Image (cartoon, rainbow, N blue to C red; front, top):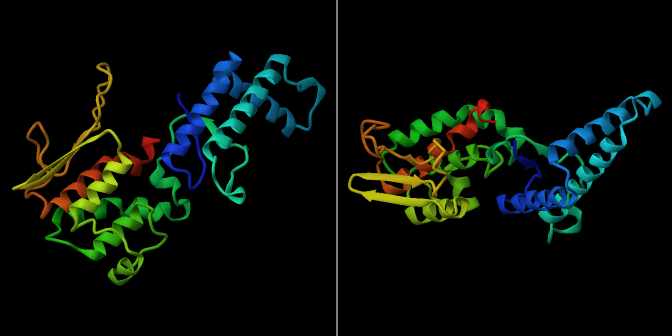
Length: 250
């Protein structure tokens, strides 16, 4: 199981920096993060019981717990480096072990149930869109957690939201920033888009590459290709995010 760090408003790069700092602490200590986590749990359980003498953690558990707390502190300091002082997150149950909850969920937990429910509808609307659609643009932004509530085309203009169904350059810039190292391929006639995973382990059978319309094996996601290339790339990006909207994914 990987280490995970959950700090609200942190970017993927900042979270990765924090995890790397925690890993460095474990490596230098010679204690695995699994053993450190077990020690931390033993100490916290002893605390919850009121520190009974007959349940005191062993010296090994106490030492392991100390390493965990140092790693968590290092992760927070590295992740939040350069943040305003009042925004810096202090180390307290932000480091864990296990699959990372998808960013699309943690970016706005309050709206997540509604956004998760609406994901499939958004994909279906992209598949059948006949051209640029500002209502669909803002609905996508809401489902992805980029805005805090559903809105109108007028509000999309006021907020300066990207033209996800009408401006390929904007969609490509967003996709390239969020998926650094991935390859983006665009077809003009008929319109299609593919997002291709970087080189991966030969033993890894889980290929994350996706297409908006036509898959390499000839399978078609829908009868007709997308209406334009911006819609095609947005649709491919939404397909890539599909697992993030499924509870079993994490």
